[in-house]
Image (tube, rainbow, N blue to C red; front, side):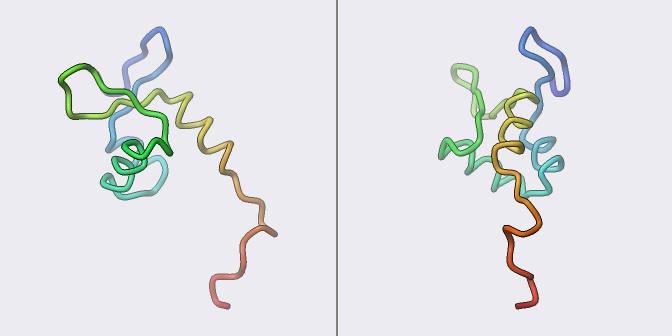
Length: 74
């Protein structure tokens, strides 16, 4: 199922989204649970599924420009 293309585009697992966003899988699950990251669940399923286009839309929406972030050293 993971990485397969549906009528909505490629479907990703929590682990794949975590790798793509460089986040811990538990963080991705919490973001999905909180509604911060678009995700889908099949009835009776515990696992989240993510459409690639939704994840990329999330990335575009939260894109940070270089001048928007303070230097990590101070």
